[in-house]
Every structure is written in structure tokens, then in C-alpha cells.
Length: 164
Image 1 (cartoon, rainbow, N blue to C red):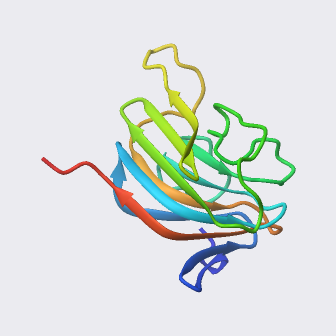
Image 2 (cartoon, rainbow, N blue to C red; image 1 turned 90 degrees about the horizontal axis):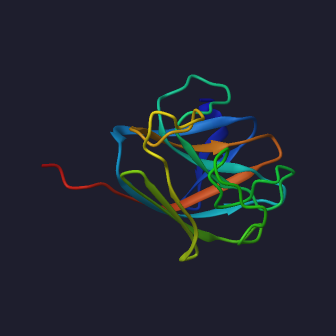
């Protein structure tokens, strides 16, 4: 979505401009781990989506999003599972590289920021589970939230279970 908003600078993937999403679509993922280093500007907002289908555009509420937001007006801060479990204080600072590690196994999501667990969430596996965000199977997408945001991702590593 809006490929002109994404580029590569100094070995990092950089997103700027209006809302857009950069997808990894080589395979639909279930269990996986992703590690990356992230830098977000002051007032910036981004996120790492997973278990999402491809969307041509717009805001979407399926799958899950690990929030990348230290000082943006949205009170949901870095490390949160947006729309599911909210953290109201960011564990990192603007304009500094920090490490994000997301591990999804079965119904469990663990988010580490700079090696510290900030989120350990197990989604209820029952027919009565409310909400549209679910653990499932889908793509990963980096989000560029708004024109005031500038986000950088580097040293991206993805690990999936060995194929049987």
C-alpha cells in the first residue's frame, strides 16, 4: 500500500508519509518469531501487524498489531497489543534504536522490548471469544501511521518452524 512511502536508507527500511503498510507475503505464518531493531521519531506512530490478510488500503482490525509509539497522541504505547492489551508507558525513547522480539506459538504471544518481556498474552481459545483480533494465520505488515511519523526497521530476522 502506497509503495512511495517506503524506502531504504543506511541499511534500514524507512516509512514516511500518509498511512501505509509494507507486507511480507512470501508465506502465511502461524507460529513464528520476528526480531528487529526499530527507531521512531518524536510523535511518531507505527506497528508490526501479524496474522493479517492482504488489505488494499485503509485501517484494519484483524490479526494483531504490536504497537510502536512512544510519544504519539494515541495513549497505547510501544509493546502493546493494540485493541487487546494496552500499555500506557513506553519502555523506550524516541529517536533511539530499540529491539523488538515477537514470538507467537499456539495461542500465546510474547513481546520483548530490549530483551525485557513487556507482554505475555494467551488468547482464549473458545467459541465465545469477543473481538475481531485473533491469532490465526496470515502475513506480517509494517505500518506507517500518519504524515508526522517516520519509522525505521533494520536487522529484521524471521524464524518459522521447520517444515515437516
